[in-house]
Image (tube, rainbow, N blue to C red; front, side, top):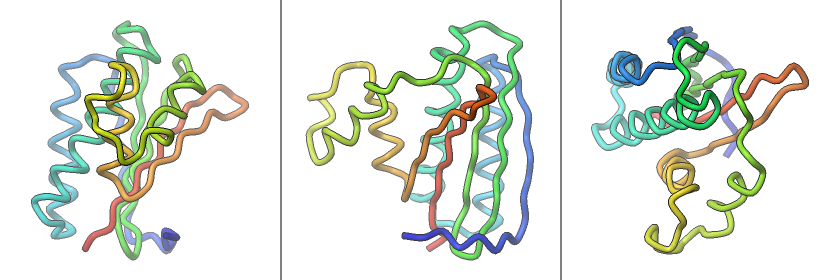
Length: 147
């Protein structure tokens, strides 16, 4: 599914790598989803996925060290929301990125503890992409259609 890039609006958010900030970001994401009249189920899927990604950034990329930057953009496209999370922590290991793809259509209980969150994100969102730039910026791009 191609995401149509004609943007309606882009909102930029910034937080520090502290777990108590996650609830504020979550509330902002939910509010944005409501503005685009997404269903309650889709809002829950987006909120859970973004929260999981932020938790992974804090816990794994930044090793639970407070004070590091996490930037988030939310772009309202023609057909859905594109949420991009940016951090400059330790990139996700390649083997973790491959686990959810290899175990698609399997029971979540079959997964090791590491990789379950990413599996959930890939299952709940319409698309998920993870890249690291040459400059060392990790980018997680999540997409969910409006309808």
